Image (cartoon, rainbow, N blue to C red; front, side, top):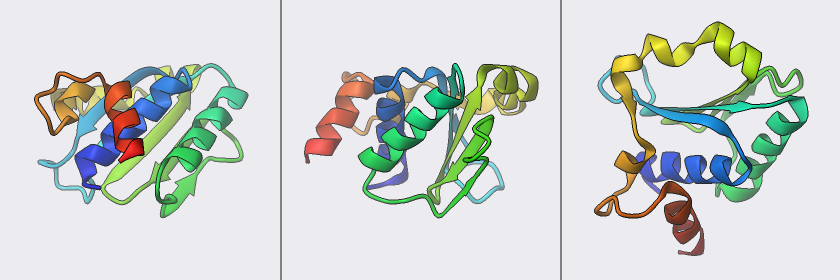
Length: 130
């Protein structure tokens, strides 16, 4: 699975578990060693845990590194060239990391390797069955 397909699958899994304000930041042209950030918001620590579990259950690999999992305020899961940031609402508003990379925000549909006609959730479900 390439980086864009992995990011798209992550978006789909987060959407299915009601992750909010999901954005993708394309870091491929930036001088840091990752391709994409996927950022999402959860309502509370239990919701953050549900999002983490969705990724653990729905992805074919484990993250190479994770931070903040026990606190569940700001969780970072490193999947190599895709890094996932899960925030509780207050932490997301405070850190506002997407504003740092506002010129690199992309629509999740831009990750689709096909003609972009599928929704992210549909593409993630199709990818799971293949």
